[in-house]
Amino acid sequence: MEQRVVILCAALLLIAAGAACQSSGTNRLAAADAGNANASSNSGAKAAKPTVDEIRAVLAAHDKALNDKNLDGVMSTYSSDPNTVMLGTGTEERWTGPQEIRGAYTEIFKDYDPGTLVADCNWKTGGADDGGTMAWLAASCNAKDSFQGKAREYKLNVSGALAKQNGQWKFVVLHMSNAFEPPVTK
Image (spheres, rainbow, N blue to C red):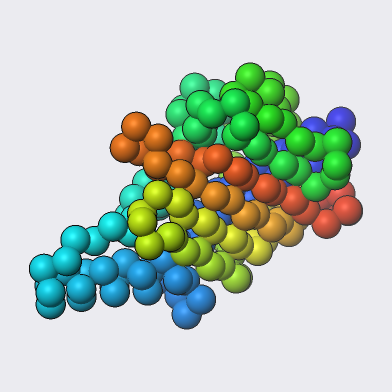
């Protein structure tokens, strides 16, 4: 049970990571997006980097599917590459490839009430390569959910990398962790 709570806490951080692509002083992705827009309007150059909206769309799709306990929806945000990895807090929390990641989310879904996942990120950042093929994000967040009607609060960290697969952004690495302390139940 304790491992599943850690996995759940880690997964909830991804919801918070949606804020990692919002405009902020440390958001390099937003700055790159603005720079690309200026380059396009000033010199006719094409914007190769991903837009903030493209990355937000992947996060929003994951978050909605996670909140709804929609396994196929969550998996649609991940790359089908067999080297795709999801990491949790401990060394034993490593899932590689779609089948293992699907199994991890199957367990995660058992540990929270649907529709209760909320996160507030007090630090966030992100970026992308010049070629527009890789993007990354990171955030530290305060999260809330409930399990069997009991509200819980915890702190989470998330980092991830996304790559283009068949013209769509997909997670190739997602690392979610929380401090080694159980969630506070209210």
